[in-house]
Length: 256
Image (cartoon, rainbow, N blue to C red):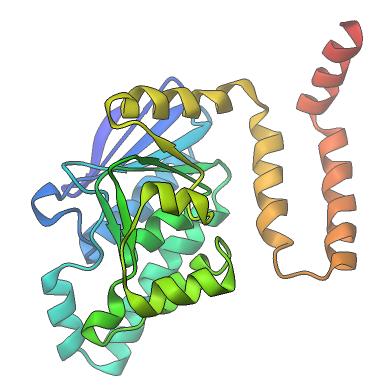
């Protein structure tokens, strides 16, 4: 299945892998209302497709996503408080949706992932990046604040690294991003497509129900105390034990 969710976001689902592609290459896949709406629609479609086991999010052209586009920035400067609130909430909903849908979302980053685009990548459950890619939070250069992406960044790297990246606005390489924990792994440029596909295919060999429950448990326990997280884990443990996937998996394991 292959289609457009709108003219700036492409979606297809083949052999268990849902592929969502930002499709504004002439604008470096910059974020605007239409692109954000298209991403939400594509994520919903993937989440409702029982055949999709993993989502790969990428950008067409030379860059993953350069953040907000010029028109969006102009809109911010002339909008009312209420309009800016609605606009910011829409982006927040996108970030939360990535974390709450049932299957893993893997960002496949080539080129630049900057500002909200860097936030979009790191909001995903995992990030694979081409060796030539670049990451950064340049918001403070124009007097803006990396407000929502801050919440994501602080959950990926140490406090000191997060503060440095947000306040110096410097770009970092894929190698440094991996070293500080911002991304999972660096992929060689010439093998990018095949290596990303191979990584995504690992989720075709796991239990979709178990992965979905693991994802839910992982993020739900993030702000809990240790005791609350363990109690929540008890409930999830029992749910997993009673699932058909678990019962079938145990039976196969015992048979050798």
